[in-house]
Image 1 (spheres, rainbow over the protein chains, first blue to last red):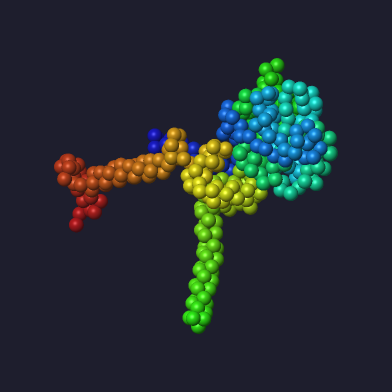
Image 2: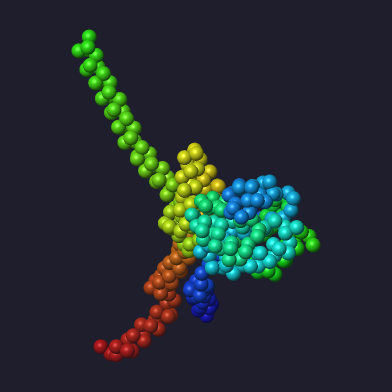
Length: 181
Length: 162
């Protein structure tokens, strides 16, 4: 009897494991950043001409750190979910631009300047956007894909990374955490 | 004097040209060696945007950029361990296709050995039990004399009188 129970238990266990493997679908891509609570890596990237009046030809993150929290959003012109989140980012930026700096980074999109300009035109994006043409910065931020958004405290450490399109609610929640309001 | 200098100059030019050719020939070999090193490291890294593919196997944009980054670092004199540490620092242990041999990951390395030892142990116990059981059913030395007599009587009864 004991032997029968053991055989049934092992068979059910292995069968369950097999079914789990079959039914679990694609693996979870929302992996926490390895750099949470650590200082973010800085970059100095060329800005789209429309933003150069305020910052100069490039945006140097090191120069911006320390004054206020920063939200860094990675996007690409070919990425559908980036189109979904762009209006939310612009709305949040317009509401909080005195307290938080937003930076858009076009990445994994080599040579697609015209497409990038069209993306910025389409959503009338007013926060600064830079070009990571060789995707070097996306490697520095441990990017898995686009869109991804990094919420950086004013001391330069990473509070949170969001994989996938952001919503206005999430932006409001994280801005409140960053600013302590 | 001119007769002596001319062959000397020609010889020097030939030697110089030969050296140049040798250097040019070494270049592709060095390049091949570098590419091989790049792919050796890329094979150990997981493509961030793919499913179950290494950076070496994937043609996703990010994998191409990562291979380029590996090459840049190797050309700058970084070792394989340093390049792997660079990616691990940014992506965490997830980026390594082979889990690191420390902490909880050690379990993954030990598991096959543990499973093998457990399997061998279970098989050994079963074989000992089976051998004992077989010996008990065939060994007549320990059988009770009265039981044997009963069996002989039953057999004789079945066979009937000769």
